[in-house]
Length: 246
Ligand code: PGA
Image (cartoon, rainbow, N blue to C red; front, side, top):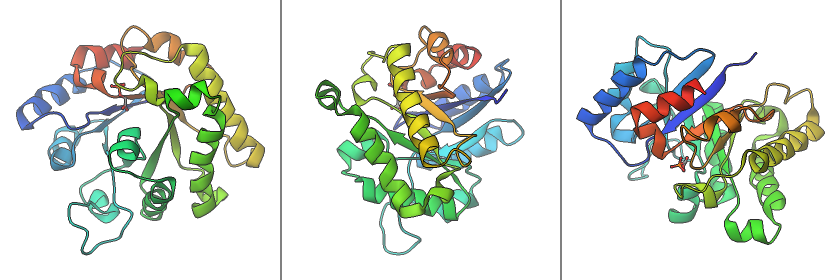
């Protein structure tokens, strides 16, 4: 069976002292069949990389530029992420979409950059509460995926990991039920398999949105949930361990 993938998205939290304490705890987890990825804020990528260097834990960035290099103040390029030992990068997190006005088009460009640099993109998608209530969940999600496929091509999309994060569940303590999450995960898998089942036999779809030590077991028991993207609970060593053990 494929290992479950658990990503800790620290968002804009931590400092060099607390990072070290947290990573040292994670290094002592007794997990099996689980791949753990940590996504610290950009200034701490190198610090975390050196702390996890001898372990099976992998490094991810929270964001990446859609540009190669040059006059893009404040941005981080794929070659920089490669240079410091990153394996993954989140793209299109709902906070990036909402607060930093990232469009599906920009997100698709970022995914293209990552794929060209052999980095693994984690494409975050999800609907707002309003969209869910208006029965737009399916169309919103398919559009978020399709725009990336249109730019990078279906074959190239295969390594992309999808993180389904309903916006109404992020940081709200209000998680999707296991059934609600499973329904959307299945919808995503079915959609991609309809496009070409030979490409997507190994597709990984993560769930995110208020995942914690209490709901992780019921969510991960769902057939189409391959792991989690964890925000708040990934900052708490004990809670994150319970999620990884689930
Ligand atoms: P949360 O965040 O677990 O705190 O809801 C998830 C995310 O934003 O990736």
